[in-house]
Image (cartoon, rainbow over all chains, first blue to last red; front, side):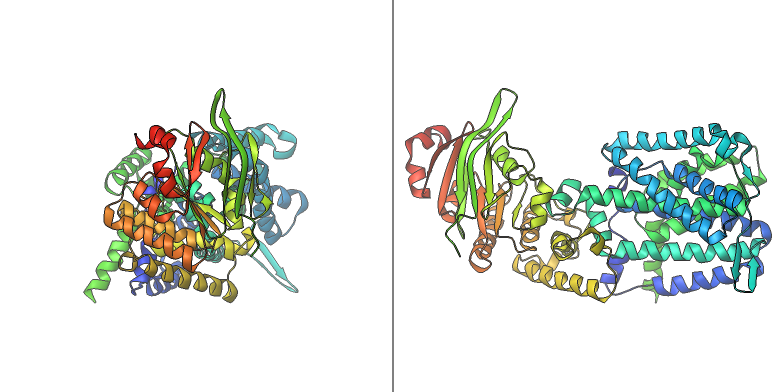
Length: 336
Length: 256
């Protein structure tokens, strides 16, 4: 499966840094400023689309660690997304625990569940591993549908409360779109920071080494098996956090949260944005989630248009949009 | 230093079904020695290497590294110790990464022994990585790859990749390096550079070597002792000069 990312040379940005020019700082600051004032000029519907995009950014970040950096193609993100959503929803509905408890529990529980799933799955190579992760999604959906005493089956769990924060006498409920937008924005920013720190650490370099050549990585002393397992768990935890936000935002979870469609969406975000780059994945989640929302103007043609868009992407930008962003920034640099 | 050999192998066997690829080979490498391993194709040299370095599990026999029994350890267990490293017949580098990154990765697990420590952020981890980079740059200079150090390793020539691989193996300061045909498929000028690098590592860093090589000129000029394998068995052992004269060796390998 590593072939998928074989052509991606390591983060063009890093080479840019090596050559002594770096535009990411100014770009990043501009983007953050823009994100902070977005509610001033965006209506509720575009904000809703961005919220969904930022929620999907979390599992996409996780998948990027797994696929883009470690070279493992997994379709299990939707399963972990669903597990996170159900964990949060069950805690909130049955025990009335506050949002931050549900949120943290979703990530931790999902990460732990990934351990027994990862141990057999990661023993498989390439295509078999992909098929196995696909199985997780189907099993997850079957459990959510049929364990009716716990999940209420197809009826789903309704009434998941909007996030509520209480600090001493002050309490605050995030109910409106704008409030939720800022909540998700902060969490997405933190998640991006965590991914950045992982990727820049020696561990990130070891992950890239595993992606490039697993046997060679082993021969230089990298415990590849443990790495793959740890990254699989981290990537699942990211999906779990995303699922928790999803549950608290929509206030309803149903077996439809375990959708193959979500796994492919996350895959499209990572591959289309640019596997093995952080900026590419952020761009990808905004673009692809935004695109499916924008195409709602023509409901009948929506998925067909989306399909053609993806075909075009594969033909013209086989490495995703990240190389394009890199070329654009070096173009700007040359003009200076 | 004690007189124990750095690598001591006794009665090593490896069978695949009825085929005995390696059949009771004894071999030792002394400290500071460059030992050659030659033999016709299919004589079991690479299988022998695989068994010693943990890529394959020997059917019988014992491997002692520095007095410690490491028989049956996995490639990763042995590599993580950092005392004995090996190269592969088919040169492999981390193609998408530049030379410096390749070398830093090769040294990393010995600077950050635990998995969790590799997630380390903060000044301590940064200093350790900086130290690795310094050592990597030094080795890149020695290997004569300074001018191409920012290029992806996969874009470089086969010979240059061999040099990268060799420099990578020096990162963790090993005591013993096993080279599988280090001269195969590289041009004569680079052969000289690889030979020089091996000599330098041997004299300056005190690394011992066990080298599989078909280029008999290289073997005679580089090795202090040569072991000949044929059909999985040890055919002869001795100084390079004696081996070239040995009748049995000439018939089996050197072509009369």
